[in-house]
Every structure is written in structure tokens, then in C-alpha cells.
Length: 178
Image 1 (spheres, rainbow, N blue to C red):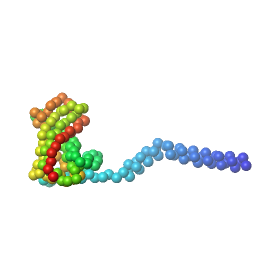
Image 2 (image 1 turned 90 degrees about the vertical axis):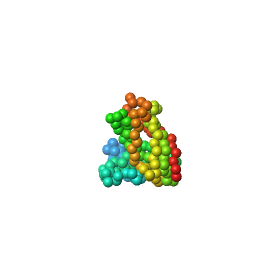
Image 3 (image 1 turned 30 degrees about the vertical axis):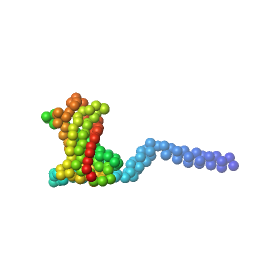
Image 4 (image 1 turned 180 degrees about the vertical axis):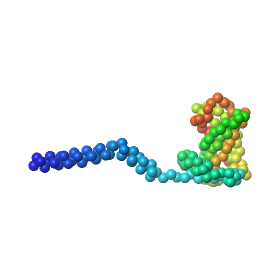
């Protein structure tokens, strides 16, 4: 009888010990994370180019890069127009060019967007400018759609030339037609 009980206990210890060890092993945890990441569904966010864009000079690599950046932003925030930076460049004359996505979170098409865009770094105003995105040039932005665009802050619009634009946000006020 003791041999049977001892055999059962050894079997239970071996079985539970192996299970416990395999569940907590780092390689198994990493494998599980990889499986979960692979199972996540990437939702392609929608974007379009405006009527003034020359599509013949926009290559597939650029389109793919834009799509990847936009997907990382996630869904378009509801009931707002958002301005999300893609890239920033300094010009030789001291101007700053920002490539950005303009995103329509409203349930209707919008156009003739009149906006004031402030560039903020660590709660400090770096640049401020007024921008008008006309229906003729920028086009109509449908609901839940994003559009890549470039804006320029001229030297006279730059309030602080010493701050590096690494972690900036774009604060906006705007009016639009629909």
C-alpha cells in the first residue's frame, strides 16, 4: 500500500512540477507574448491625398510609411479635428516645416478649415501660426479620414528658436465648414 501511495505522490509531484515549470519558464512566456502580438489585428486607418497632390511623385514606399505612422496613431478621435505631427524639418532661412496628418473625427465631411496651430514643447510655446486649408487646395475631408499635409512656420512665427522639437504637441483652435 505504501508503494502505491508513494508512486501516486511521485506521479503527482512530477506532473505538477513539470506543469508549473513550463508555465513559468521565460521562453514559454515570450512565446505566448509573440503569439498574442501576432493575433492582434492591425486596423488600417484611412487616409487620402488632397486635390492639389501630385500622385505621380508619391511612391509606394512613402504611402506605406504614411500608413504605418497613421496606424500607430489609432482611431481618429471623435468630434474633433486633430493635427498629428509626422516629421519636422528646419529650413536654412530659419523656418520650420511640419509634415502632419489632419484627421476628421466628426460624423460629417469638413472643408475650408481655418485654424491656429501652436507648437508646444514642455508646455512652452515654440511657434504659432494661422493656417487655412481651402476646399480648392486641401479638398473635402470625409468623416474618420486623415490627410497628410505640410505646413510652414516662417521665422517671424517662431517664438523660441532654442528649443529642440523632439517631443512636441500641436495645440489647435479651428473653424470649418460642412
